[in-house]
Image (cartoon, rainbow, N blue to C red; front, side):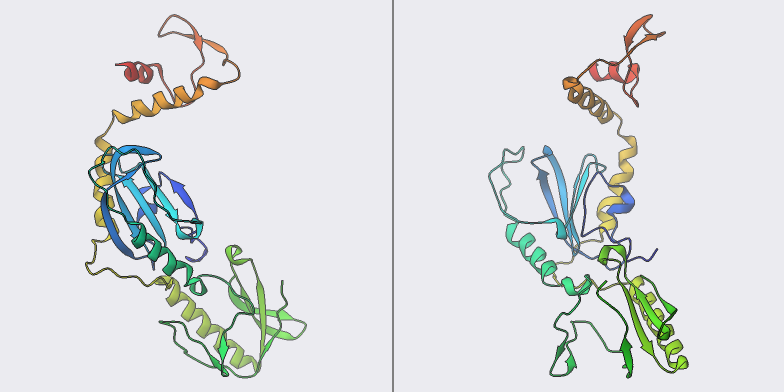
Amino acid sequence: MSVLDALWEDRDVRFDVSSQQMKTRPGEVLIDCLDSIEDTKGNNGDRGRLLVTNLRIIWHSLALPRVNLSIGYNCILNITTRTANSGDMERKQNYQDFITNTDTAYETSKMYRDFKLRSALIQNKQLRLLPQEHVYDKINGVWNLSSDQRSIKIRDSKFGLALVIESSQQSGGYVLGFKIDPVEKLQESVKEINSLHKVYSASPIFGVDYEMEEKPQPLEALTVEQIQDDVEIDSDDHTDAFVAYFADGNKQQDREPVFSEELGLAIEKLKDGFTLQGLWEVMS
């Protein structure tokens, strides 16, 4: 699978992602790091850190970095401010303008990341180049065999051998065909396009150009070490078990009774992943 096929960072909202998914992907750049930030909706009072990249916003708890949130810019409909009950009321800095500007930079650069048909690419018979875009070659005498209906290769068609470009399912799964004569020219074009695609995939340009005066540390330096410390934290798992059982209070029916050798009596069957010892520790 191509590195671009796996692009999810700007298109998904994910909770409690792994340390690997918190790392920047090729082409993703950390724009700024904001400390002493709380997730007032899901983790009120838990001090954390907000990491703003050119593809998404990441929040993670400082005490327990595996508690985190990844929000892709493509999922954002609106950005506003509101008054919330916070455990850190002394800190009242408004980051709305900064995040809004970053999101605007993302919205105005979708040509870098999306598949476009019939868009305004030509002006005065010249290709309108995007910032950081370069023309490497011009191939004349190319017939477009495509109709409006992923990889780059040569395929036999009713017009003979043709250059075929298949787009990813994310972009609509289009199949585009181009007739290039002679065959030697077709072979050279396919080789050149594949080489450029390979180079681009290693370090793609996503188009979000937003820089701060002070450069933040790399994302890995801000998160990986914290996540490794998570191995030593054990007591918080008890709270997770308590919350899971508390949320189960509105169940429609009791689970089947089973005999517990540990207690010497029949008890309701525990939910998967829980033990009696773990529940006793919740109460201690």
